[in-house]
Length: 174
Image (cartoon, rainbow, N blue to C red; front, top):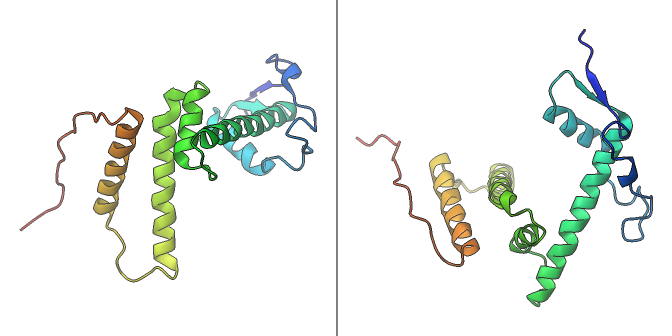
C-alpha cells in the first residue's frame, strides 16, 4: 500500500476561509449544503489515487462549492432583474459567470448544459409519455447540439458568428 499525501485545511492555508454556520443568507449550514457522499466522490475522482484529502479539507471544499453556487445564483438574479425578468434562465447564469470573472469557463459550462439537455431529453423520450418512436438518431442529436453551440456563440459574440467548419458526413449512402 502506497502512503498518500494528506492535505488539511491548515496545510493549505485555508482555515480562515471556513464559513460560519449562518453565513448563507440566514440559513443554517445544514439547510444549504451539498450531499457529502457525492461531493467526496467528486473530490476523490479529481485527484491522483495516491492523494488523500483530510476531512476538514473536504468540508471546506464543500463549503466553497456552496458559496460559489450562492455567488453565481445571486449574480444571475441581478442579471435577470436588470432585464426585468422574473425567472433566471441559463443565459442569465452564463452572463453572471462572465460578470464574476469566470468567462473562460462559459463555453465548457454551456457544453455541459447542452449535454445535460440532450441526456434529459433522451431519458424522457426513452422511458416516458413522450415516447412515440420519433427519437433523434445520434447523428441528428450531434447536429442539433452543434447548431445550439453555434447559436450560443453567436449570442455571446453579439450576433457575430465564427466561420463554420466544414461538416463531414459519416453516414454511408448507397
